[in-house]
Amino acid sequence: MKRSVLVLLWLPAIGSGDESHIQLKDGAGKELVAAKCAICHSLDYIPMNAPFLGPADWEKVVDKMVGTMGAPVSDEEVPVVLRYLNTNYGQ
Amino acid sequence: MLPGPDTLPAGALESAVLSSLPGKQPLIKRTYRPPNYETPPAALNDPFTPNSRFFVRYHLSSIPAVDAAAWKLRIGGDAVGTPLEYTLAELQRRFEVVDLAAVCQCAGNRRGLFQPHVPGIQWGHGAMGNALWKGIRLRDVLSRAHLKKEALEVTFDGADTGVLAKTPDFVKSLPLAKALDDHTLIAFAMNGEALPHWNGFPARLVVPGWTATYWVKHLNAIDVVSKAFDGFWMKTAYRIPTGLFAEGGRFLSQQTETSTPVTELLVNSLITHPADGQRFGHGDAIDINGVAWDGGQGISRVEISTDGGRSWDLCALGKDYGPYAWRPWVYRFAPSHSGTFAVKVRATNRSGSTQGTTAIENPAGYHHNAIQTITIHRV
Image (cartoon, chains in turn green, purple):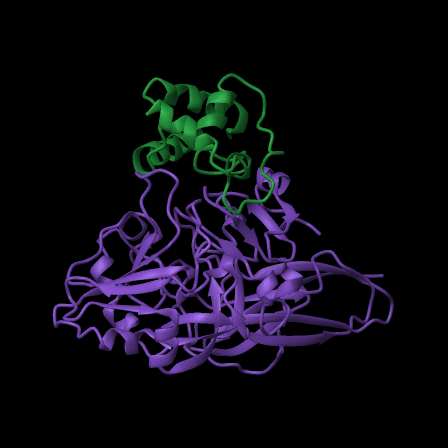
């Protein structure tokens, strides 16, 4: 699983514009968030949905991404992701 | 160029830029991947939105460049008697080709204007466009497949997929009656040109009067099925609370006690000129322009207020390109004094439905059709 994720990270972003300049805010968990979320989508999804989501809202978003969309985020990683989102892009 | 109305979430305004996808003029980028780009309001001033300015909306990031020569459309499912497969040339040769003017509007257009904000793509006004679509009637194709009497819904899949195998593929369904509607098309062209890649080349579904979520791009598979389709993008996504909106277009086989698919467009209007905050000189007559549309009943009148909603006057309606197209309107405003003017516009359709002062809140932020207000200044 881990290996397939790494491979996917290096796939070219098909048809995308220049997403490389997107800078997430610095904070604990940033690298994990960037690595996992960018497998499927550009990171502008995060600031676009800020700053109006509270902890319960971000939890719903992450649940959907992991549970429904299949984001490979482990049970141990979910709290790290949520802490980063709430601290840096929370309500 | 502003990246959107200033009531969008702060982060949405900061992360938006004008950016060009290959083959497109600059659009307002909401997200790069999957690409979600909206049309600047000033580019919605034309009766038909140029292909190069037409909005782009995807859910999934793996979007192949489809080879038209190799492309095939498969028609199957448990409720057809005769499964079929056609090349593009076969479809164009064997079926009557028709033209239809219709608005394509994302169900979540203007989501970013909801207060409180709700998660999703934070669209301003531009996740929409009007085009002249050319294609064949879906009904004509389905009739060759000999539908069984138990046919209930028709599902549509396109070539785009998720990056991960687990991500639900973007598959939509229509109730049989809407699939068999005379005006539901498999379109190959818009505004006299082949569909742009970003708008569904080589073929997309056109479902006039219904939100763009059903207008599946890069269409390559159609299944006629005897049971309600239970894919994520029908049973979980694109739903509104049952009974909240007085829209038409019921989709009963997908409806539950609590939620139902978002279907038919609500009556709506947009001011395309002047821009919000624009200044005018002494003595200028100001032509206020825009468009109005609905789910296909047709626009009966557009009213304008230049005093913040205290009094209303009728706008002149422009050419009628058909009930599914938007209707241009214009009003000449000659302010007799200097000052700041709050301009509001509201459309009413032939069923008597009109726009309210606030949008109806719903969890996913669909169907925003509140009366728009812009401010203009005359010195």
